[in-house]
Amino acid sequence: MLKTAYFKKEKVSFSDKGKGRVVVLLHGFLGSHEIWKSTIENLSKSYRVIAIDLPGHGATPCFGYAHSMDLMAKSVKAVVDFLRLKKYVIVGHSMGGYVGLAFADLFPDNLKGLCLLHSTAYPDNEEKKKDRLRAITLVKANKTVYTKNSIRNLFATKNLKYLKDEISFATQIAKQTSRRGIVAALHGMRDRPGRDIILGLVEYPIMMVIGEQDNVLPYEQLLEQSRLIKNSSVLYLEHDGHFGFLESPKHSFKGLRKFLRKCF
Image (tube, rainbow, N blue to C red; front, side):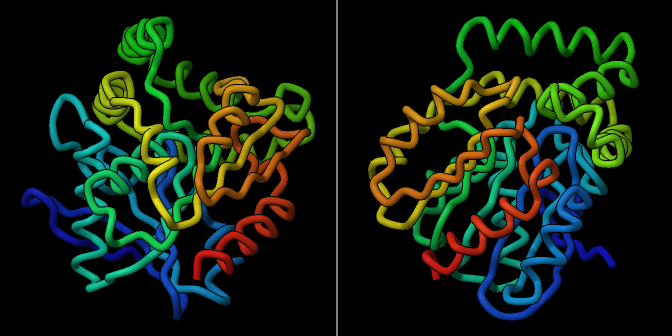
């Protein structure tokens, strides 16, 4: 059963399961709270798990032509404030990690920890910015083909033949994302600032989950970035791409649980 909180006079949808210390899950681009199904089942035995539909994704509507990471972070704050939560760990997958970093920048006093799940604190380089614009053109031409190809690219190439159910699951969620929501997120990701300075400043633990076979973020760059973190944990998944919690769920849950114990 989804719940809602108001942000800019619109409803932000989220799920809320379990009791105890709070973990906030932020899905990636083309995702929704549904992508966390197994993660919620696993973590809610020990924690209160809040999984939010970010603007333009899942059951949460769009808030304009472009969704900046700051705007998304403020929608997350609207949910946790509605629930009267003061301290929590944020786990952000890909785009959700960008939102988590924006949240850390805007609301530093509320975090007990931050997990960047296949995500980066660096901004888009010029080539990546051009790719985002090309993606917008592709989405406008044929959303179905774009979403299908995008999801397949998030899995390690060698895993495609083994993980057909997981790919289908992620693809079905992606199909529910509106063309407008996709375009707004692409603009927001393209224009986001770098936030790597945060990694070396904050006292709370930060975890990076890195896939060696990631087609989106080069693992070498993420390993280099992890060395900037003052209080770091690294989970290195040598057989996985950009979707470690679907590709290697047991390894991912074990690493995440260890990190959460460190945070709390």
